[in-house]
Image (cartoon, rainbow, N blue to C red; front, top):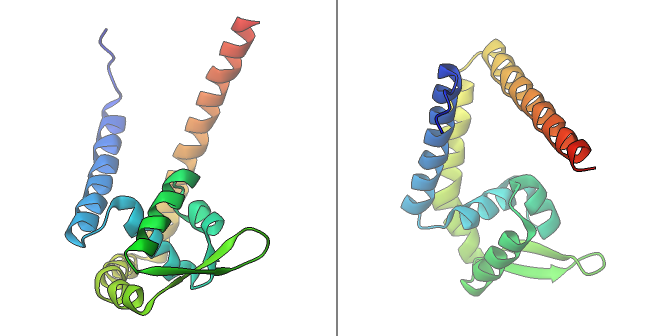
Length: 154
């Protein structure tokens, strides 16, 4: 079967994949798995004392990935746990973790921030507007497919 993809969608997919690949290269270069980097970046953004729930909502990683990576980061001496509300533990960087985040995560985040500093407010708005429009429309199309499939199955 051959499907002819819209040429703009082809380029969008290629660029999206290039961004994902670039982030992966950054993670590897900085000595982290993708999930470990994302978790350390999340702690940098959310602050010490954040929870695994906050991290998985921030990163959009699944709960099991966050749980596994957090345990490994703890074994590696980069994070510690403190009692939180209920069963939820608060996560904080250790001194070693703080140094590593300052050396390996913060410079990348600052560089990415600088990219947006170089863009105009109008460019920010347009970029976000178009991505949001694409995502909203795509979600609607897929939801319609699901609904149609459910109706067909009944």
